[in-house]
Length: 618
Image (tube, rainbow, N blue to C red; front, side):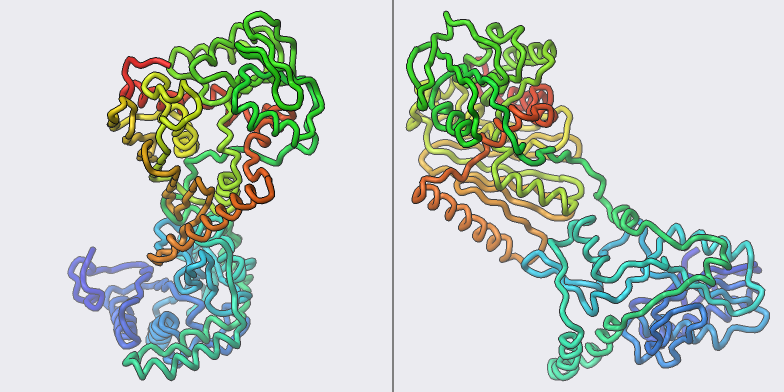
């Protein structure tokens, strides 16, 4: 039934008679007078329809502000004007009902705490405000108790009161978890369970009192006569305690609730649809077993050998290539075509991408972990060969997507693990590289044949954009442009998996190297940047701050690069991270970097490659 709330008595569809009425109505947008008028009309309606039992949903906010211990016998506030905006209208309605209820009408006043249940619009409203720094500023005393309950528990209490009306009237029932959290503990949970902020900031009560007094002076000067800041803030500075033992005995039920779990269920889009990489800690001890390297190009000289040295590896290192020679540290390079490969703990396949697959026959039957430098393959046929090879082995076959272990990516994953992001809705990738014509590797400069922009330059970043979750990707759109030298200069498109869409733009040409990946989650957004490396979080809706956060992160990344040049340090330890785990705990990498785990991603890359490069083969 619908109709004006002040016309209950005149609604012809509510003619009665009724055994009981349960009233949830509060005129939040009305003033004290409007709520008193409604409460009086409710009692008149009950009289007219011969209601025997009225269950009215009240609130602890109706109790006198002078009370520090809230129980079922605590007195109601007779002067609503002394309360804040919410407490004043609740107290006005409650006192009106108590003063006008007839003796024949049994009255049950149920006082629930903060009700958690599906449909909560803003879990921090009235308790905190978001700061530009992505923190939550707690409004009032952080150690004041936040009385909690759930909608399901309140409904259960209403049902029990309906089934067993009170023996005396009026009765007051306090529907509050006796172990409710403090305001700060609740807001801390909002930060972690709902991703509302990085952490909670509190201020001494004296500061809030001073702010309230100052507000009382300023509000009339700016024409806000009804604001009454001091009255609003004073109620949030009271440290109240709640004791609902009488209610628990009366209803025969526990009032305790798992408020953290209910908090997560109260907002939409909180169900997890991402899988965070189980990176863990780098092993404290790296075994010094033998290592075999197939392909002795620049990536081995610049990344793999220095990483082994920094990790303290002391075992045998053998290298193979089509040309014999010597690497740094005295490592001999043998002819891949004639020299037999011995058993090793780790085999690194670092030959140029188009010839990776040739290593399969030489490694078949040899025990040990295989680590393939990206890309694992250039086309579905080559990847299928690696999949078949991996299925026939007991030891893991991994692909070195080392960018997942960059410091900014690890920081992002750590943040997501602590501050729940909710559903991942959209990812935007923008990657820009200098021209392939300036690359030192001849095979990369033949861009259409080697698929350089997609399968080499942009692959790490496309992988990061797609690294959350499992399942086949649906390539929605893709287009490309070719420059005057028949090199792919632009690849642009979009893909979808589940509820997540990914838009990507890969370019090579005149501009310097730059990458931005924006992850838009249900609860907040994060940005990954490279060249320089950065990670920024966007939890606040202030328009200027997201840019400020990225600028600050970019300056930190730039400082790392300067330190690298000045002190000859190595800030990028991502290869170290992968190699150390591949030597000590490869099973931890298999769920993220294993060829089986990367099957969906490479399936998308090959779809893009077929649309962009067609019959070109690496």
